[in-house]
Image 1 (tube, rainbow, N blue to C red):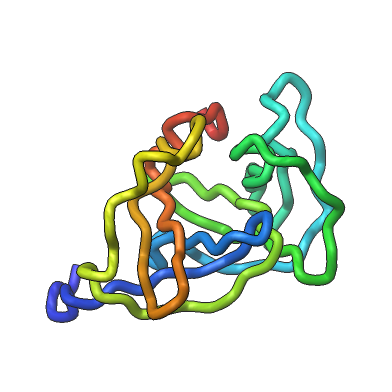
Image 2 (image 1 turned 180 degrees about the horizontal axis):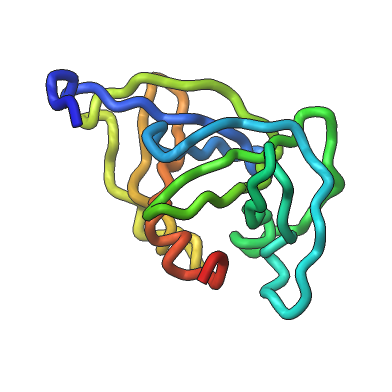
Amino acid sequence: MNRVLAEEKKIVAFLVDGKEYAMDVRHVLSIEKMLPITRVPNVPDYIKGVINLRGLIIPVINLRKRFGMKEIAATEDTRIVITEFDGKQIGFIVDSANDVVEINPDDIGPQPETVGNDRKDFIEGIIKLGERLIILLDLEKILQKNEVGS
């Protein structure tokens, strides 16, 4: 991996329930509009099912449900963020995908101690960009805690 730009990090920012979250762009393959999702029996409720993306069958996790939030109907803005981590491709349903942002690792602070429930396990840190606060998700922890692709 090229370490020349080690000072900069790129993230993909997206919204879930009105809050801005992000993932490291290195793990994001694409951002897709909603696709037909086939339900899979006997999986946790946050696993929405699977999609057929250009011939690949990819499991899809609803981040709202994963975070213990109320699920909402898909809108024109709803997206599926396709990620690859540890050789597995997994999609995450988000309310909308905002943009790709370059940040300095110094902009990432620790998560607040007051974050409740399981969500704190998924947070790598909080990014401060001017007035914006973006919750940086730890994709490894989200994927280790689920049964997708096992």
